[in-house]
Length: 122
Image (tube, rainbow, N blue to C red; front, side):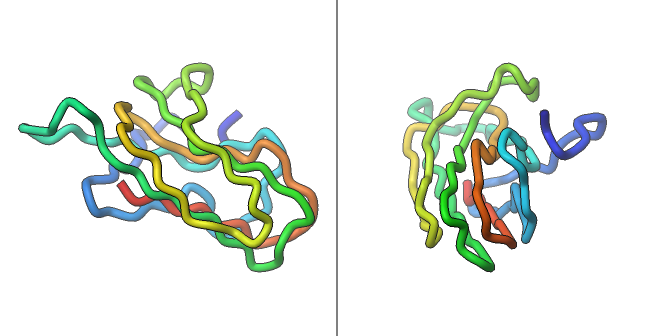
């Protein structure tokens, strides 16, 4: 279940924008962060876009599993995992060929640590 309300339209990430799916939080396993819409500007190539995402921890967890997820519609059951990070020190990852209308980061599991931040760059 998403932590954030889906009653209001999500913020949009245009090319070059940065969004925080989690921002200095301590999510429980199964918690989805804030979702972002990915507008498709005119002339956008069909092969998709490159998305860079980064995990940062104020205090490192002993174990963690965070997933970058995408969906065509902003419906919890439609989100599918594109990439997963289990690096307890945090890391930056890149996914290419993303063809979706929405992105979010989901905390699959977490043990210890604090101040979880998940940044998205579309």
